[in-house]
Amino acid sequence: MSTSVTPDAPAPATAPAIQGAAVRRGDRTFLGLSRGAGILILVLMAAIAAFLIWKAIPSLQANTANFFTETEWKPDADPAFFGIAALTFGTIMTSVIAMALAVPVGIGIALFIAHYANRRLGAALGFITDLLAAVPSIIFGMWGLSFLMPQMQGFLEWLTTYFGWIPLFANDLGIFTRSIMIAGVVLAIMVLPTVSAISREVFVQVPREHIEAALALGATRWEMVRMAIFPFAKPGMISASMLGLGRALGETIAVALILSANYTINWQITEPGGNTFAANIALRWNEAGPIGLSALVASGLVLFVITLVVNMAARLIIARRAEFSGANG
Amino acid sequence: MAKRIDVNDLDIYYGSFKAVEGVSFSVEPCSVTAFIGPSGCGKSTVLRTLNRMHEVIPGAYADGKVLLDGEDIYGSDVDPVNVRRTIGMVFQRPNPFPTMSIYENVVAGLRLEGGKRSRAELDDRVESSLRGANLWEEVKDRLNRPGSGLSGGQQQRLCIARAIAVEPAVLLMDEPCSALDPISTQAIEDLIDELKERYTIVIVTHNMQQAARVSDRTAFFNLAGVGKPGRLVEINSTDVLFSTPSQQATEDYISGRFG
Figure (cartoon, chains in turn yellow, brown):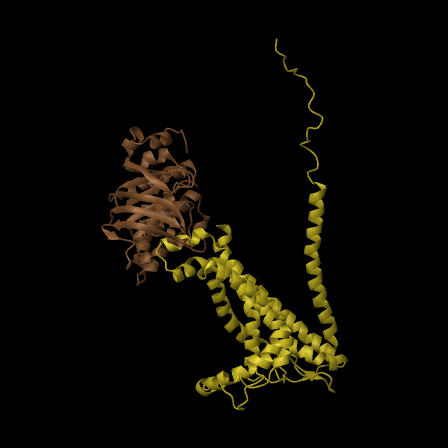
């Protein structure tokens, strides 16, 4: 006779309760930690902004010139007068030159490593770009000053001779050192590894299906790049450029070494002179009086805002086409 | 126009590894030929040599002749890019360009051909291609929406529309239904039936019933042995191959004894 299952057999004591609190301790801890970290970032940002504003107020009150349009920087004079016009010009000009050179070249390098070079060469070059991105900026500054600047003389003279009719490249002084142009080129070389390392990361993530889809339609390699890789990688390329731009905008020591700092807005960018926010802070901090320090903080606040605006603009560009990004494909 | 394919003694290599050996067969214009066989037997590899897509993989090359209406696509003066413009391909996973709208996906191949086309001409081609892929009614009101927003089956039909928009001579399909649900599969199979009036179709499938349903001729591929290259065991009209195969291996495979 077979044993029958007793209908009223007790349920196993260890049966998991279906009802009841669903939150486990691990989940809760992790939620707390991650939420805390998220809040901490916001608090830090706010604290930095508050600090900068607080420290900047005395100089802004003492200033007798227009902070935004004045080019001179004499915060410790009596009465204090200073403005950020020349600094803004120098910062943006050096960064624009840097980006104009670094973004196309950096993306080209990344493209070559990711999709043109054979595997071994690509790996080696990728490794080298990653290493270059980690070289401290003072090294670039020294190299730019002692090696690149003399080397660029001939080129800049040629540029002025044949393209001097473009106001940007005119040079009335006949001196081609310590200029915004050279600072921009050094910055370009400095941000180049950043741009190319991040772009390369994005390029190798393009799904094989998209690449094959383009090739199977009869795309040449370059058409495939434009059809499948660039559209997919666009947000990444923008991020890479923005990170590079952030580095260029904030770069201090290399620029401070190269520029012969003055406070003029000179569109003839191969002539010596110019200054940037970061370099100015580094050069003036030690010799500044109380109002001088406060004025430097005020200029730092502007740099802070510029970087924030640049980054938010980049986010907006990325978000606008989010629906067509590869992420939801 | 649809063209015929003749493959003569084709060997396919990945670097020093010989993946497929001694394949010869012919495909008539405006017919459907199915490739079946166990995984890893080289049927997809053979398919990809028909439009030189296997060369995309570093180190891969083929040795032998593939004639498209008598013209060797491996000739020394032949650009693989032109081969791929003549022989379209649909992949296992639907792969519309995610950054393009439905409209732009369809005209992607036309844009590669260059030359100026009027907007009206492009509109016409988009409509006829999407109608050809049985997708027009479903998407005509949202041509400017991203292609990646469609369902898997719709995406695959979009890929077919993209492939036929350039009016290829041959359409290659690499397991086009393996990522799709039965209803979408049915839609694609119906579509294949319509497409063969205008195109020569070669389809790789894991699904023997599908091969039996859609194809006029079926080719059975198998490995010569473990670690040995794949080979074409037999090719015959689909009815004959499934009812009275000439090779024991074919019979074992279609009766489910292996694979």
